[in-house]
Amino acid sequence: MATAFGSNIPSNDGTSSKVRVFVGLDGTQGLTNAGGDAPDIRQFNNNPEFLGANYDPGHIGSGTYKDIKIGQSRQQPVYTLLTANNDAICIAYMTTTWPDGSQYAFAGNWGHTCGQD
Image 1 (tube, rainbow, N blue to C red):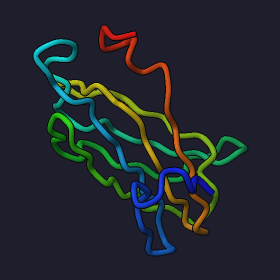
Image 2: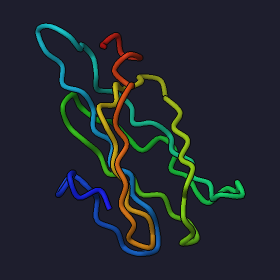
Image 3: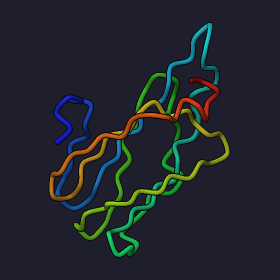
Image 4: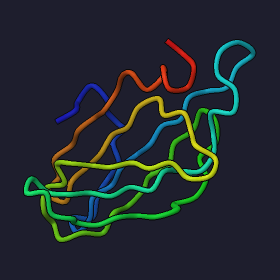
C-alpha cells in the first residue's frame, strides 16, 4: 500500500481500476504548458493479456490531477501503458487503485521528458 501518498490515491468501486494522473505546475521558471490531453491508458495482466482501456479521457490542467477509470475484469493490472494524445502532458506522478483494493504509486524520471531534471 502506498501510505505515504495518503489521500492522493483514488477510491475504487471494486469492478475497475483507477489511475490518478498528476500534472506538473507551470511557473515563471521551469515548466510551461504542462497541462493538456490526458493520456490513453491500457492495462494488461502478467500474461500479458489485455484487461481494459480508457481512450481520450479528457483534459488535465497545469498543477491538477484527473482520475481515469479503466473498466476491466477484476484482474491485477500489473502492466499499464500510457500513450500521449495531441497535446501531451508533463506527468509529475501517478497513483492507482486496483479492483482488489491494492494501491500503488509511480514517481520519478518523467521530468526529463518535459525538459526538467
